Image 1 (cartoon, one colour):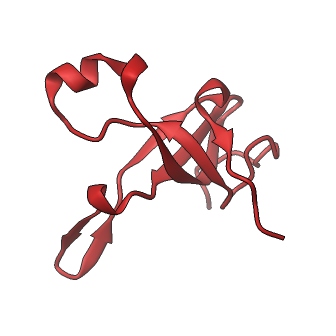
Image 2: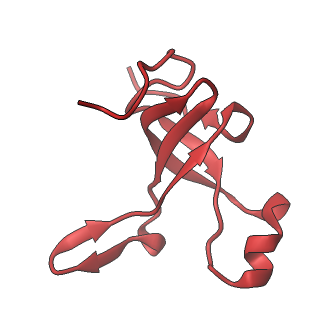
Length: 88
């Protein structure tokens, strides 16, 4: 059973998107959300009527532990997402 809603298609599951996300966990950077860079991510599900769960796909932010790859994830609403053109 999935905890996600049925995706409404505005930002379909598995689609690549741009979303703001901090490159560091520095307190000053985290507080200045308006200046976060737009990074590549992928939709992994829709959590609410205007909320999507995004995994950030930036190698510099990927961590490895015991042979497992961990990428950061976040929830974003539609004003914080931009579709990346999909290859046909």
